[in-house]
Length: 202
Image (tube, rainbow, N blue to C red):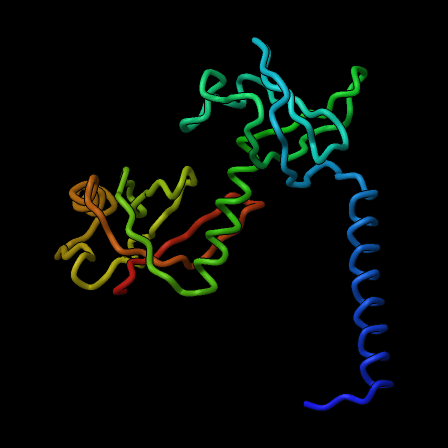
């Protein structure tokens, strides 16, 4: 493609202006402080008996309570200074200039976001049945409780009873506990903590 000198000059002027605009936007984002409910990255400064202290985007110091770390594989003994991870701001700055943040809440938010994407893509998940009740089956989906109603089971797995009653259905459903099933997401609502599933072949 051929450009005249004037065209090349205008092209580089426009490119430089666009670059400056992007830098300005980055600077504005830096000046805008994170607020309660935001997910932010934090770097471990130190850890104490009460919890861990984080540098939040070089803006403020966040503190994660030790009880917040008692889930999954994240516990205070395994966290090192300099380690980075995402946390959620869960309160206002206290009298000591510290911002309360939660690693657990951030992890849960990320899981819900991923579940939303899975539903949008109509992808199937391989899940293990953890329990049953008279209405259906329960699953643990990355720490989130998921429910599959009896009506959403496939024809092969739907209870075949001549005179079905809630108790008889419950007895049939208990046979699924511990088994793996292919499931798809019908409803995902992070605010109501609601995750409804159906069997993938249903």
